[in-house]
Image 1 (tube, rainbow, N blue to C red):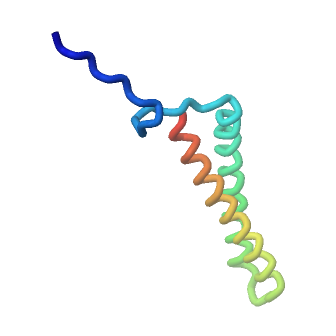
Image 2 (cartoon, rainbow, N blue to C red):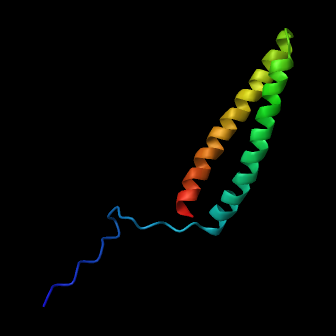
Image 3 (cartoon, rainbow, N blue to C red):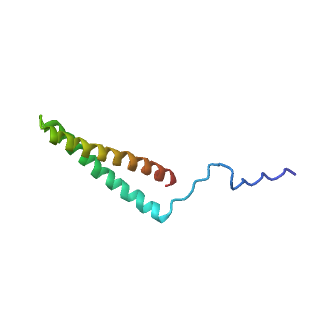
Length: 87
């Protein structure tokens, strides 16, 4: 008789996927919409930046807003990737 294979250890890093919780599923769905809105906002700010001309204060204001939007996009994209791996 052949010995039965040993059961995988619960602490062993295996291919077992952690299931997405209800809260994570809601967050995942919400992030998709937020990313679309942020991308639209980013495009609008880039257009404003291109059309700001030589108005230094407007350039600074738009650049600051754009930096925040890009940081939000980066954070939410990273979070979306993590959640999508659980899906």
